[in-house]
Length: 575
Image (cartoon, rainbow, N blue to C red; front, side, top):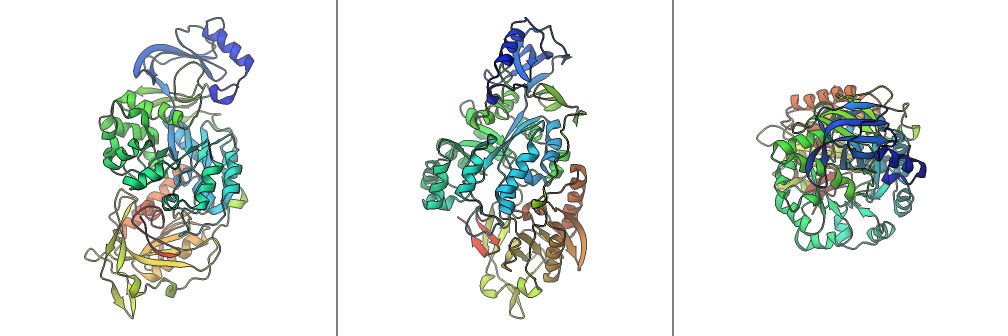
């Protein structure tokens, strides 16, 4: 099947499309009588969409077809394109991610697989690439640029310039992944120079949380063309002026859309698109994917056709995904039929000219045979023996704390008065103090390194929670009110080959094993989402007021997001 502009030239398929477009031969499929979204002109118009060999042959009046679907005035639009996502945040393996998002109208995602790369290096990404083959979803890769995210984290694998060059040669690679180590960029470090050199001529994804003024000018002038880290309107406007494509993020933990939507005007909208970044299994199952982001945007005042363009053409055009993002001749017939445009109610999803999902469910035969994760991604948790005494916090290191910010992944650095017992700083749970232990344990090479600090904002009255999802090096991160429970939660996730756990009084009250690289489950989305909901509820029962305690916990060791973190190398001030 010739799939349009991106996929090369097939003379026979081209000549057949010529005949179909001119009415000399019937189309394979015609979507008849729809209101077609013109992403270029910003309007709707009534027309048929004729498809031949998986490609749109023409948009107009096409009565002749081998198969005809009367869409009865419903909206026909390009399928949606996620401009920046980490598939691993779904907690499910690649085919199951596709099963989750395709019925919601997603036709393409640009994923930065730096989560799996931090654990398993290039072979980990190759496993994801293999699993993506044949899916009814275009999975484009940006090649991770910062593994580890900075020198303050300890990953499980090396991923340097040689690995970047190898992956950039893949046809699925669309550019360099987010340049997260912005301090290294601003310092002009040699390692960054080498990565910029090997990616010359390719798109480079940006990551510049909180940058403004001269540092932003220096960063934007170094080659990144986009950014998805803005949390405020002034920050996003400054990045737009600096020439960056502003990807408006709305994830499960990062809720930025409402604050950034005023940026989108008649003049600016061509330089804005949408990114889910990190969307967990519960959100995918119960809310959706880009369709949910579009509903939120439209519900907050964004004109529907403008929203559709931002979620289709703008993202595809930025990433040079030729043949995607428009309902026009020569483009891939990756389409959605919306039963209701303002509600973004997806009735049909088409991929390569075939209906692959109908009314929220995949159709039989839409998915290829299962592609399980390979053995190299199993048994990735390697811990040195750990004792309660390893979790001690010295008084000299206890005068500051990481303060979590609900709805954001940025944190605050706050001064605190430590609570001392037997010569050590201890947790002080409860509303008055809300001082808990934040622990990060190296889990890839059994080094025994443990970082310990104070954290405020998780609100646990008792117990502990732990996770092997710990951006970006994915060591073990844990928060707790009691050292013994911290140790038990850490041991629980390690024994399961990775995962999430909640412990209280020495008893495991909830546990989700994630045996694929310590990041993913091989189980269906419905089962994983149900287990994840139990975990979140367990954390709230332990006292946390956060809407997603485990979602926020996953970012507490990320060394490239301001303003404070704890990694396996200790307490860290960022920015």
